[in-house]
Image (cartoon, rainbow, N blue to C red; front, side):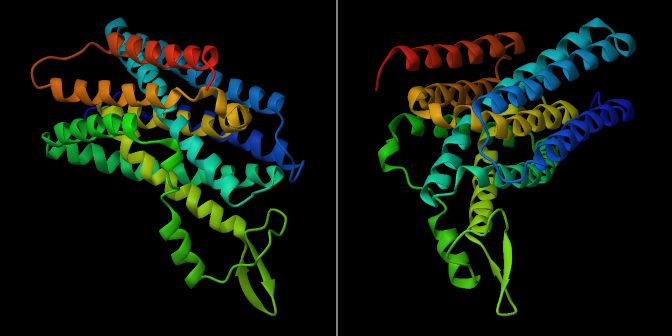
Length: 313
């Protein structure tokens, strides 16, 4: 697998991510359990989006110096397109997380801790799935068409699935866990485990964390193949994916109270999946330019967001 990822680029990426995560954890961690305000969420959303754009600019400058303008333009555009696609597909995951929190009546002040550990777990999960997926595509190129057909089917299915008839999808997992693990009946602040009568009990917050991680695992089957339609450079795939995942937590708190205003976004996400799936299948005959992909995806998302705001449910 050919990649532009050098030791310097990988080191720069991990340094930036670890620094911002540490600032997030230690600065906000001092406040202990608290409800994340819209202002706080907006600030951190801006921080993560800004980090992604700054990283892209630094990568462009580095590639311009070492590989020339053509490679710099191509890779920075691939990163930006991949980031936009992964961020948009993460919105569907965000609505499922919102359903999980409502279903288990998780207090607002405890949600931040669940999402923090959920994001850290998602980073490890995505690393494994991305590099194993890239290896499989590199060894068996025909899998790219299987991924394309899967995304096309998933996108079409979204048009016909009623939100009212959706289930959490994790009910079987939830039932199995509750039958095999000792759980307390109530939340115990932000704790995932407590001791009672010298026995270790998991709290409902731990169950919620498992379901959040499982939902990310399910949605990764859509989002990871989607970026393979843009690039199969491991560095671009991983970095754009991780920046999108890291920004998901703050975007969740920003939009959680506004979710009902974006009722048409589901159809925008479905169109994105259909377009990306079609792009992967059409790749056998012709390649759709990355810049055109970026414009189409941005136009779809912007249109559905505007129509959602203009049209009442």
